[in-house]
Picture 1: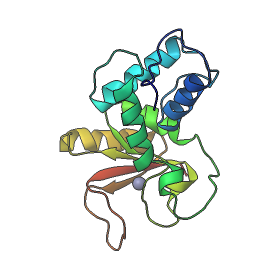
Picture 2: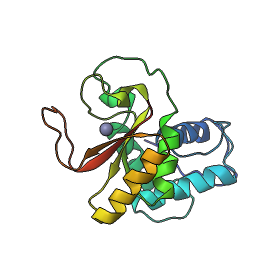
Picture 3: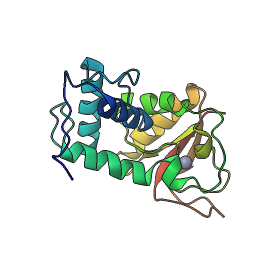
Length: 176
Ligand SMILES: [Zn+2]
């Protein structure tokens, strides 16, 4: 292996485009995958670093790439799609991601990972949101707002009866 890859404002090329695609796949918005590390890409890197709890410097270095790799392994079509279903509405989940993040909630899964067979996650129109770091009142408020926005909300703070796969307490948001 060569030197560890570090990308930052001003960097250009395929590595930057790959970084942009990986950020987009995690629900961040670095702009188009144009291979130019500009302000939007820097802000997306900062948001990702913040969410991952690593140092926020807007520079994609070893830790950032490790976290992206880990996120990809646990949450991607490639790693987790056991159904072979081609996503019908890929990208829709990003509006759910924005909705949750704008309200201070952490998105734990989007279009990948392990879900029940036939899950809307595999169609790119659902996300899961962490609840254990929020109060009941905050969660209830979030559910009301999500429903008011027209999203289907599955309250999976307890394992739904008969559900094969359950990753712990969360809300399931879905575009129907
Ligand atoms: Zn879900």
